[in-house]
Image (cartoon, helix red, strand yellow):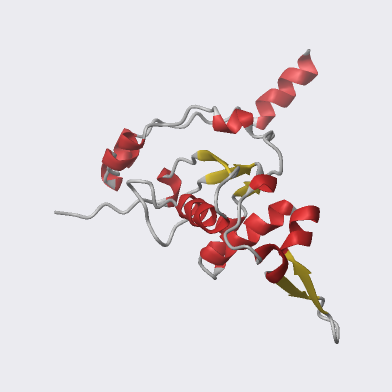
Length: 181
């Protein structure tokens, strides 16, 4: 019995739309991170980018637990200059950039390596209900059963069954035809 290991070229990307309205930030971020990793797929491989994209809409309507979290939770970043530590409260972040709150929460739940950085690029967050990825979401995709069952052909058969490649016309012939015309 052999274990099937999916290859990067066999992965078919999927697009998921998640509505953040009235959802708790932590639970939403955990669900989005799991979708980005591809853990919902039958052919999940932990060391590969499963090429799933997640679109989060209504980021401004996300819900927070706790009474004082809006003023007590603080986001920090450093400008890389001396004394450059900057702080911003959750209340102010939601007023100015509500999408960054979700992005920050999801990024913390992804792997902290190159794979996590690559997965993070597949996250699209929008404040309102509209997004410009409607054609990707509605695009038909190959069924996953075809990917999981397909087995690679042995190299000897693949070479024997390959069609011969047509050779391009000789450059001297095409130049003679142009001069005679």
